[in-house]
Image (cartoon, rainbow, N blue to C red; front, side, top):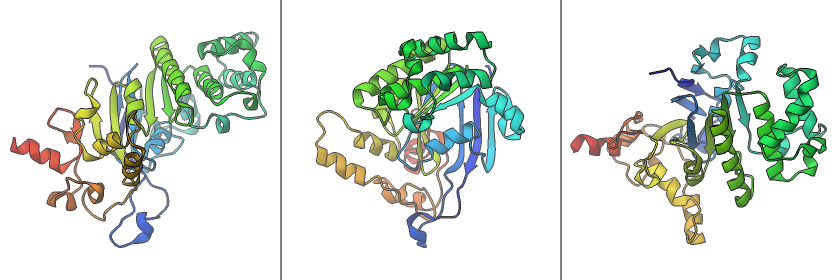
Length: 327
């Protein structure tokens, strides 16, 4: 079997010493990322889902070494990025591009669309000077924008158009891995669908590996083959390709499903379930146990490891693993 394009191995990242819950004795500080490991094959789509503060964006930034992990390794195409000097890392990082949530803040308002794309081409010396404008037009066409958009500025564009420009700018670097970090969450629902379809088309046509990050499981399932679920900086469940969302076993994943907006759900029910998703992290044991309806004695003593569950997928839950051992 070929080595994966990307391997994240035990990555941990902390920011400062602030503790959850105002420093109460029953609550402990946890890293933004806590020993996360995952792999991504060439041309594969992986979804990452979790609530705000679960570590999704920190994971994206650590993968690209925009944030340097405190511990662990990030191996891209056989190279451990954490061992590279600045120059070597810059050359490799071109192959890993991120599209962020807010397309307006991601673009320089003083640069036209054409100049923003041309800047990438010139910095990385990807095309000859005489071919820059034609490549800019080609990139705009790839994301569904006319060549005339090159003369416009970010303020002249809609949110969906700006995000298309951000995608085009990422593609200008000719990456092998594209990370979409909440790339549709700031857009209207109808525009979200267009951007999701665009990402799928580009991934297929260009053979990209894609990590799609969102807080909404149903949006992630629309685009991803495998789905990793994060809570409190940890990967707590990995749903394999073809596994229905409703078959998820971890109580937190089930809570995310229950809280996701769907047609016909009473608004009050959604609000109550969202309110239940405020993080509280106990001092010992499973970080989710204070909110978990299935918690029992082992949950208060030991953090459950991520291990194969009853349906063969990875899960970190004492209750589920206990049911497996009894069956």
